[in-house]
Image (spheres, rainbow, N blue to C red):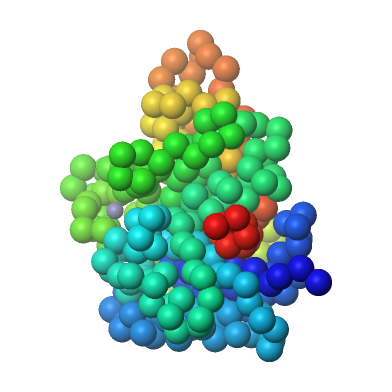
Length: 297
Ligand SMILES: [Zn+2]
């Protein structure tokens, strides 16, 4: 029996803990709702703890990896800033390690998703890619020659907060007109209205032919393509891998995304467009990557 490593995706909407095989297959998962940014940090600690205990189910845990939707300090295991979580300038890894009595490692959620794609997904065939996740918000990671490029502060890839509309909608990050105000799960919910419980319900309705749901996904997909055009113009990647919960909509999202990318990319008629591919590890990629960092330290 190999040691039990648990990964937890701490996202803006849900906490998803899981056990994953050596080949990246999910063996067991548990989920909890994420307390909002205004909650006490302790409330999020409790939600994560409950999910970890449910997955462990009485077994001894060797280490826990956390995939965190926010800016993190890897070496100190600290969450510096998160637009959606109550952990702010927070020594998360040390506190949870003391509470659970096991090593806790953490990384940014999109970096974890990139680690998962490198180990089990698109990265096996494509050593150079941009990973852009579209979930509650938008996140990104830059992979070159099979390695993450993290930037001077370890904060590279915050593509969701590139301004696309001057003096546009106020964003939770404190800025205005950020891409994720127009292209994200939150934007999708706002566009689709109150008729749907969550993003998954919108995707299901759109798949069934619901015009309002299809239109909402098309609008989000269009804005997402406009955002990608800026990134492709900047980085010229051969491949863009799209992950996050909204990517479960597949072509209902990515069709409009590719059209907008082609319409708004500089020199589009004079260059090869990148392949835009759905992430192999799906919306569980953050959790799968978190297991990997728990294993490898
Ligand atoms: Zn923002």
